[in-house]
Amino acid sequence: MADPKGFLTTPREVADRRPVPERVKDWNEVYPGGPGKALLPIIGKQAGRCMDCGIPFCHSGCPLGNLIPEWNDLVWRDDWTGAIERLHATNNFPEFTGRLCPAPCETSCVLGINQDPVTIKNVEVAIVDKAWESGDVRPQPPEWLTGKTIAVVGSGPAGLSVAQQLTRAGHTVAVYERASAPGGLLRFGIPEFKMEKAQVERRIQQMKEEGTVFRSGVNVGVDVTGTQLKQRYDAVVVATGATAARDLPVPGREFGGIHQAMEYLPQANRVALGETVEDQIVATDKDVVIIGGGDTGADCLGTAHRQGARSVTQLEIMPRPSDERPDAHPWPTYPMIYRVASAHEEGGDRVYAVSTNKFVADDNGQVAGLDLVEVELVDGKFTPVEGSERTIPAQLVLLAMGFLGPEKEGFLEQLGVELDERGNVKRDKTYQTSVDGVFACGDAGRGQSLIVWAIAEGRSAANGVDAFLTGSSTLPTPIPPTARPLVV
Image 1 (cartoon, rainbow, N blue to C red):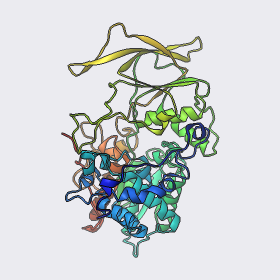
Image 2: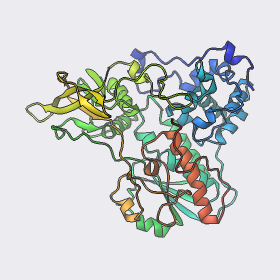
Image 3: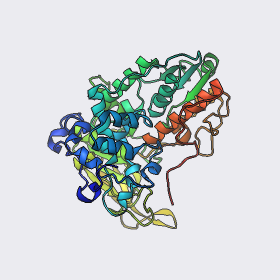
Image 4: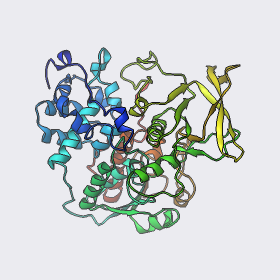
C-alpha cells in the first residue's frame, strides 16, 4: 500500500496548464514542458492517495487491466524503474493513454464513491515521461525469429500495439499506412497541443529498432490489394480504424466551407509540424461552427483558436450534461457529466439541445450561416421546440459527429470479410475474421471507441495471430472482442 492515510490527508491535485493567452499562440502541449514534467512536484503525494482496495475497481474500468495500485505504490516509494515495468506490463503506449484517454479508470476508482478519485491518468503519464528521460524505455527485440510474416494494415493505436506484440514474439511484421508517416490519428488527427508528435516518433523508432517494418505512403486496396497481402503474408491484421465519418444530410450541405473534422484537423497538424498544405482549410477571421460536442469537436475548437478564428460555436444535439454523476450512471460506470477540455478553457460557446435545419450561403455558394432549432426528447425522439428557430453566422462549418465504422470499399471488399449488423468487421473469439488467416482489431471491428480499447484489442488480437501461426500463444489477452464498457 502507498500512504496509509494519503486518501484522508491529501486532496486531489492536478498540474496547472499554461495560461490561455500564452498557449493559444503556439502548438505546444498545454502543460509547461509536457504533462509528465509539470506533474512531478505533486505526483508522489497524489499516488499516495491510492487506497490499495481489496477489490480495485479501477482494474474493471480499464480494459487493459492496468496494475494501477501497484504502480501508484511504486511511485509513492520513489521507485520509478519498478513503476514503468509494471505500467509496461499491460500497456504498450502509456504516454498516449496518459495524454488522450478520458480515464474510465478514475470514474471507477473506489475513492470516487464519496470524494475525488485518484489522479490515475496523471500518475501514468508522469511515470512514462520520466522513464523516457531516464532511459528506462528501451527496444525489446526478439531473441529468435519464427520465420512467420504478418501484414498489419493501419498504424493507429490498435495497429501499433498488435505489431509490437507480434514483433517481440519473433514474427516478421510489416505495418502498412496510407499516410506519409505512421501513427494514424495519433499523428494526423490529434492536435499537437494535446500530444506533441515527438511522443509518436520515439515509439515508432523503438519499434523499428525491435524489428517492425513500416511501409508508409502505401494505400492498401489501391497500391496493393488485399488479395496480394493474403498471398504474400502468413497472416493479415485489419487495423484500419473507423474512418467512415457521419455526415449531415440537410439542405445546403453542398455549399463551400462545410468540411468533415478529419479533413480539417490533419491539415492543421501537418502545418503545425512545418509542412506546406495547398489550399488549407483555415479558421482565420471566420465565424466557425463545430457540429458535435465530443473530443473531436474540442480538437477542432482548440485548433480554430490557434488559427485566429473570429468566433467559435460548438453545437450538440443532446442536452447539457449535469455537473455531478447522474443517478442513471452510478459508480463504477463511466458517467455522462459536463466536462471542460483545455480547448474549452480557451473560449468559444457551447450550445446544447439544438439541431441544424439547413445551411445558408452567400452569392458565391459559400456557407454564410446555419439555421438552428432547439430540440427536446419526446418518447426517445428529438422534437423541435416551436418558435426556437434562429440563424447564426458561419463561414466555416466542421462536422465532428463521429464515425460509422471502417471504409467498406476497396481493401475490405478484396479480403471478402463478413461485416456485423453495425457494419464493422466480424470477428470470432480469437479476433479472426470470416477469412482464414485474416484478423481485425481496434475500431475496425469494435466501432468508434477509445484509445485504451484500441490498444487492448491490439494486444488481444496478437495472441490470436500468434496462436494461429504457432499453435499456441503466451501473449496476454486483456479482453475478448465482445467486451464492452461497464454499464447498468
